[in-house]
Length: 226
Length: 414
Image: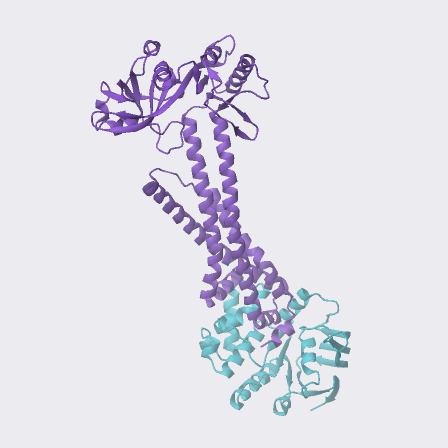
């Protein structure tokens, strides 16, 4: 079943009244449930813009974007927030954990916005941490964890709502090679479990682990089947 | 969700303790200042009402000169327009049925009083025999002079308590003693009770009473003129009727128009009303000034909330990516601002209560009389509600700025 559908997607930014940046120029892309897809491209190719569109962090200027059968056209900020919360788990390059909170509370955060009661929140967050192998680090703060561990906490946070899509933006960009392997192994496992994973990266090694890689140049797509 | 937002707000405030404390201070000072102002003026007002109330709400008094609607005008006592005929007129039940009794005073000079040991200065008033009854003043010891003593211009005097204390070490021994007033011998026949210590009543400074006729002949210029006439209405309900009767009767005999009389009649309650009006304006003025500090405090909260928002742009972006709606973000920052306001309010109320107690203590210790400082529960509740509201209002703009941040811009910032 198709999870992600982009048809004729254009994205134009206006930095000022005269200057317009045409970041995406007619993207057609389909990602099925359970696929592991890498999106590659040099900087300025539009891959961050594409990631924002797929992640419902931004809306298309023209074209159509559907996730899990829902058309995002004309959606309000609030509706987009609900979709991000329910259907997408984000993994960022800089982990983006809140430093004042324990790992457990960081993982709980999406459940807070989903309106899950406190007792269930703790249980599900603990389970997600166990899934990434950090059950014993639940009460550590991000500063007390290594980079690799922090990224695993971030992945636990992405998994905790049981989203349809894991969307990772340069997930290994800030990690050493050992931690990189850990994280990529975790993505492999998640794919085996049937999760859909989309990784945006400029590293060939990382992209190579995916089932399929798409290349972006100047806002246009060149699909290469691995 | 709300609980979580409160927890987040507490953590954010705790993370910048110094900043939070300074922000709290702005609200704290404002609330404390307003509370002390209100407490002081309410206390003064109620103390005044109480004392005036004890003098009786049935009391009317006539002074020479007149009052216009704006205030007291030309109360010249040198050529008094009041005299014994007015007393006779007002005492006539056919003319003024609602007036129960009438007393009059003739303010003589301010003179030296000498006992065997001490000299003391006091004003000497000539009064009618029923003066103490009409004013509701009681005697500590001895008796008031009789009508017979007035008719005979007797050399008798009734002292006030403070004069008695000054002249005689033991005031219970005062009655029967002879003192010299302006070089003439007088026999002390009574001592008045202490009528209050606050200095706000009409006759609280040292003032001794002698028979009306005695005062006129020995300390005045003779004649039949009077300084003031006191009247008791038959009841509180007939006070205004009594005032009207007195006005009509006196206007007729004084041959003046009702619009421009050469005398004026006032009641205690009208004085209390006037006093309360003045106190309220005073309260508003002081409260207004104190409110400005509250406004400054509110601006401080707003400023800090804006800083807090711009400092946490990335956190806001992350929260949005994880599913926080603009509403969620707005609530989070509003709660944070409300907490600053409320915490400042609670501390401000505590400081205000402490400050009020301190002022009260200082007035009674150094000023010598008890001025109650009234801080009501209403005022406290209002202060807390106001401080929280101020926090929320100050938080609206920063919170909506946070809520409107685009998640990608927010995530991108570093």
